[in-house]
Image (cartoon, rainbow, N blue to C red; front, side, top):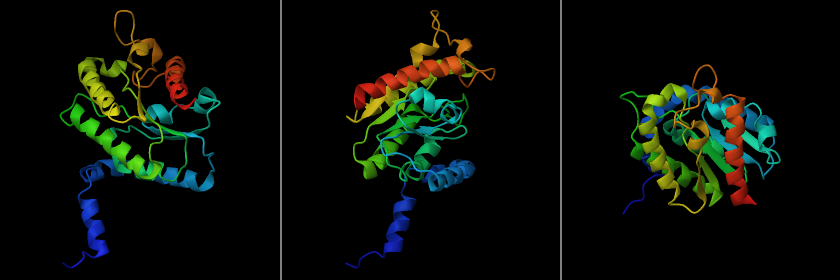
Length: 226
């Protein structure tokens, strides 16, 4: 049997990638990826840093270095990241670094539109992310933050809950992947989203929200790393 030429083999690999169908969606974030490339070229990060990857809640976390101290941080948040484009770019975001742990947050796969992804699809995307990270970093700890219930999407609480349950179940398949629950910190005693924890856009959290978020994330990291 003749062997398959290398370039054909690589073409087949790319064409069979489960993220290929998200390519056009992901392209709008190419400018952000170029910004990350530039940061990687101009900055040196310690090998014991914690890499944060995901959407605007990571990008807008201006006090992340102070909040996460004494853990050094690599921040790679961009726009309205969802699991689809994060899965597409995961190697480009993660592979240039050495790190003690990876923290993932993506909260934009549900908007109440026909294009929303099912909870099963999002869970499969997370599984792809974990496996691609594992391919280079073996079983380095990965922390997956629960999708936040924000005031602007309060009417989608059941859909978001279903997505979170699917993501949490996926995490349970791997000993080194850890779920970070956050839902309760954003709810009032009446079990409604606390608007006082968010900015005027009713999507992004304010300093008080970040303080609660930080507490939950650091607690889980401490349980695993130290």
